[in-house]
Length: 309
Image (cartoon, rainbow, N blue to C red; front, top):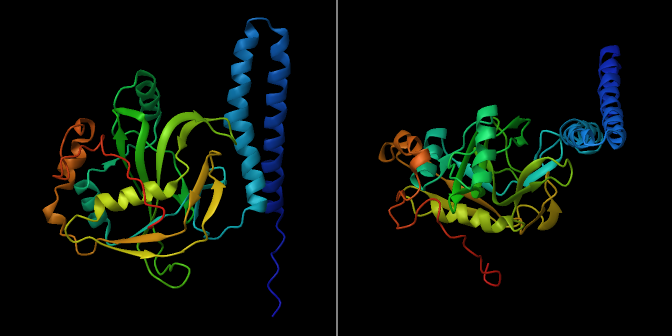
């Protein structure tokens, strides 16, 4: 059977023309800003900063959107995407259960909901990082799965600074959607560890740099949730091929391809006061949320036994 041809549309062609034109215009504007900065003395410093801002936050993102729209296939492949269309962090966790149950177990394990990305929260994370001041509810950058940004985001601050933190994003799966192989889950998640603040390799934007071994963070998240009453964990071995790659910020990532499925359908949400835990977001440091003697910001990063894993 011959596949149906995509109809030509003048509106679609016009939209594509302006999309490419805007990218080329942004590149030309950045070029002019860069070349003119050499003839302006001390004003060239300001022009150099302006050039970096144009390049990092206008030119390169636009260029990546153009290229990824052409070359990156639009189907699930076990990777998230950045807003520029680049392949992001690996999908390394899945959940079964309702939103209230997911929120309950995350709160009970000492995970703090991240603030939405706003001008105010973005400014606060910058100042908190520079001053090395705690911000347990610091926002996380948006990543896309199923065509939309994460539905939930949680984190555990390390050493009282937002520069280092455990964090995980969760996306609700579309109704009727199945994993490759036919298994149903309600949520997919991507957990990584922020090790420092730096510049993105692909866009030169200021961003967090993640630890390359994403399996360590995946196992850390499982270890915090599995002891809670009503939680069961099953693992799909070799869900994806183990690989070494880079995420949307240019950081090296590696994984063995296993996918733990965290079943929280047996959790009694009445046993966890989610609102009370969430309200303590800015005062969570030193609070024993798991009744295990560990604080949320001082939990050690577990190391997997590679030989026995």
